[in-house]
Image (cartoon, rainbow, N blue to C red; front, top):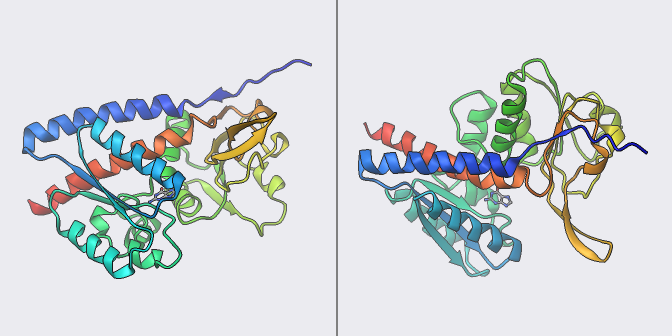
Length: 293
Ligand code: GUN
C-alpha cells in the first residue's frame, strides 16, 4: 500500500515558541518605557492533578517572558465567600493585569458566579459574560485562549478565511462557542455540531475548516475529512495502546493524510493555549494603561 500522507503538519509548538519570544521582547520594551511589569494571577482551588500541571506550566512560562506571576493555591474546601474576597483583592491590585481561575472548580463552588466576579478587563480567559457578549457582537474583547490560538494558526495557514465553510465540533463555552464566534467574525459560514447533531460525519465532510473539540479519542475518522481541508484538533486524550499510555487527539491523525494541513497532538493546539494566555495578559496591560491616560 502506498502511504501518501500529504497533509502539512501545523507546528503549534514552533508557532507558540515564536509568539512567546515576541511577547518577551514586548515585555522588555514595556518595562523600559513604563517602569512597570505586567502581572498574571492564577487561582487554583483544590489539588486536581491535571489542573496542577497546567497551573505550574502557566507560572513557569509567565516568568519566562519576564512578567510577574502570582499563583494562589487554595484548599479544596475554600468557600465561595473566601474565593470572592480573593478576587476582589486581585481586581483592585494594580500589579495584577490578568486574572485566571483554573477550571473545573470543586462542585460546591458556583463557577459562573466566580468567573463573573473577575474584572472583565482583567479576564484573560475571556470567560466573563461581558467578554463573551463583546465577542459575539464584534466588540473589542478578551478572547478565550484556545480558540484564539486556533484562529492564529488558521490565518497563518490560509490568509483570509472569508467564505470558507467551517464546522466546529463541540459547543463548550471554553472552545466551541467562542471558536464559532471568531470564525463568524472572519466571515466564514459556520456550523456547530454537538452530541445531538444528526449525521456528524456528513456535516464534517462539508468543512473547508474543521475544528474538533469534544474530548473523545480519535472520534473523527479519515473519511469524515474533505480532501484539502484544514483540520484543527483541540483534543488531548490519554489512552492505553499497545500496553503503553499515550496522548491522542479527537481526530484519527494517521487517517487524515488527504487534509491539506492538520495540527498534531501533542504539539499542535496545546502549546498555543498558554502562549495566548500570555498574549492576552499583555493585551490587558495595554488596555488598562490606555484607560488611565
Ligand atoms: N481548564 C481547562 N481549560 C481551561 C482554560 O482555558 N482556562 C481555565 N481557567 N481553566 C481551564
